[in-house]
Image (cartoon, rainbow, N blue to C red; front, top):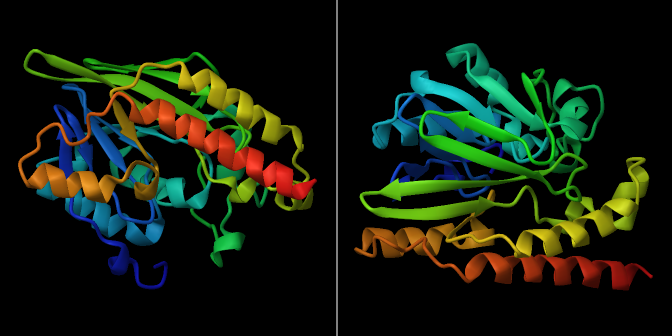
Length: 264
């Protein structure tokens, strides 16, 4: 995918109201049109930037209207294109405070090496996020909850989207993959093993959140492709499923518990 990014192309869609998917199969990118500018959640790989910009244009979204780039965490597949977008648009960037050194290049925790890549598109976040922070722009307010585990600074986001008289609450988890939470990986990177327990605790906390539209920062987490097919077939509420969020949190917790059990 990295050397041939077009193989990861996915067509864009309007998920509901002012919320859009414009990313690729390997790394999701979402756009919120706040009425006073665009908020992007995760920029994706630098190699796939042209695909994401193409998708924005297909959705009638002008990249020059981009005001904020909000990151779920500091891995290259979620922030690799950010530096180029900063230079292009002047957008303000947001990232969980513990992941700052991932994106500035001060450490090798950006996960580029593990993917056979080199990370050179470094940047310094404008706003360092902490648990309970709120990002506001136009008619949108995003609640940010610290959910460490996948990275120390992983953040989960919650916000409303509306269409006519209908309003739904969206939830996006900061990182469910266990690949960076194994004992071997954490030890090799000098990260505390307590991140495993932090992840479990975060899943319990997040499972209590009310979420109507579950968003994934990778398409496999929330079946973006399947919901896209339903959407274009005429199901305008294809992404609305109030039970999905809690089920996903419990699945992620069990997945992590199985990893920990196998490591003992």
